[in-house]
Amino acid sequence: MTQKTFVIDLDRCTGCMACEVACKQENGVPLGVYYNKVHTIGPVGTFPDIKQYFLPHICQVCKDAPCVKVCPTKATYRTEDGQILVDKEKCIGCRACMAACPYGARTFNPETKVVEKCTACNHLQQAGELPACVKVCCAHARFFGDIDDPESDVSKAIAAAGPENVHSMPDSGNHPTVRYILHKKFGEWTKNPPKMIP
Image (cartoon, rainbow, N blue to C red; front, side):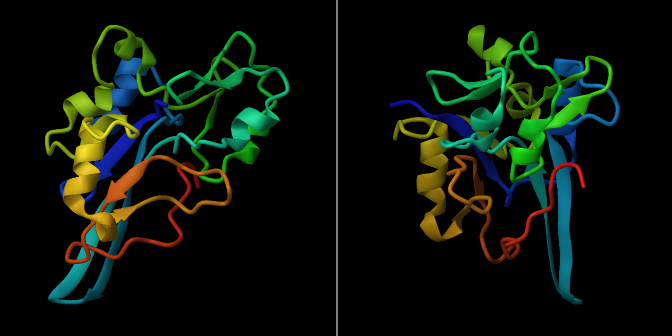
């Protein structure tokens, strides 16, 4: 089985927001609309023992995605390699998928009148390239690939970090596949991550 997804190494992420910019530029995302949003978590602690990290927030590529279940026109669908996409021709802009997403990882585009989300730059994948956010990450904090393949970049990053340092967004039965690497010396994983669009 194939499950393409992201692994993001928060130990490396500098919060430069190049991934946000690259995503907007590559996908023509208008102002106020996000497929990818970087949040600052912290600072927490007392000087000089202060911890802070940056949390890039994207679609969590859920294995049992509620957005797919609630879409009345089947505009939101899962691909054979586990990715979740939106067929903009079928989307009626009802926003049911936005309400269903537990992470707030979908956004309504006021220009096109449809719901949009991270596509992991599917058009670039079709050309044999990585998503734009992965390509521009100067800290090499982003990985993309098949998490079910032990030889993939994502699986190798997870194995190198160790299970105690690998985290995911809260699971309410939807089984998110995106993984975040964060060692305790850099920060405490947040139990209540912010939604992409507050």
